[in-house]
Image 1 (cartoon, helix red, strand yellow):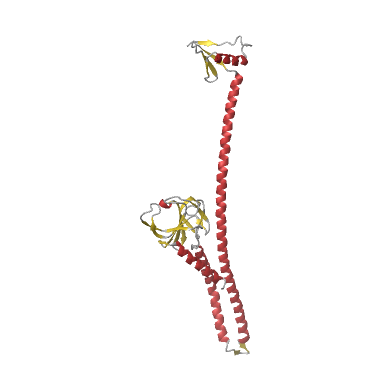
Image 2 (spheres, rainbow, N blue to C red; image 1 turned 120 degrees about the horizontal axis):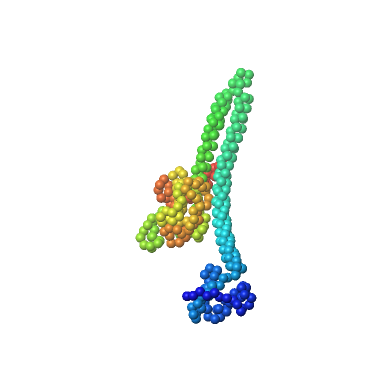
Length: 332
């Protein structure tokens, strides 16, 4: 194919940008095909196969270059803005979860402080009564003890009472220590459910709900709640495991101490990690339907000294003990 030099003579002032545009338009009107490799226009004639090059004006090149750069900048800016928005949403969600967990911890701490205050109030009351009684006995001993060399017959009895009261004063710190230990153990004893909802499947043997055939042992209770419901720790403890656990899906195991472990299955999101210390009422996960399930719920289980235990009677007895302990600390 031969190369032709296309001239713009006869179309106006020679060499101007306007003439070149008019030339291109004229070529197209005459049935020529115009190709554009880079910034050059190659004109092919469909009649005789001749070709020619036309250089684009410098101003058009600059316009195309700036337009391309501008479009790239706009696209980059849109990506940056979209990424910033998504990051803000993630940060906001994490902050909300952190605030919720802190609120649950505050509630748990307030409950523990209330128990310690009851113990402290009882201890102070006993100490005050003991001190008052000691002063009274000492005063009575002074009055009826030795008068002009005469020993009162009651002197020996008062001395015995004083000895007993001193013994009580000596063992009182031990009693306070036991009371604090009892309050600590109560805080680590499950006495609530992790979520509020209907019991959809009880503890014990049942028909397999997925296959609707065969018998299997259900080692906990299922509590029906929507996906995303906050799951609370039922007692103080340490996270022994947090992660995927077979048919339980996303799973949390808490070591509550004193041979007691509680576990929570089928969650959609875990909010704690292994080794973390949690308080009663703290949000440890969000409910879901992961693992071997037929619908959204929380599988709540309890192990006592390694044995699978029905959590409902255990929690009922724990609540009774807590009620009796609170009544005793108030002097009722």
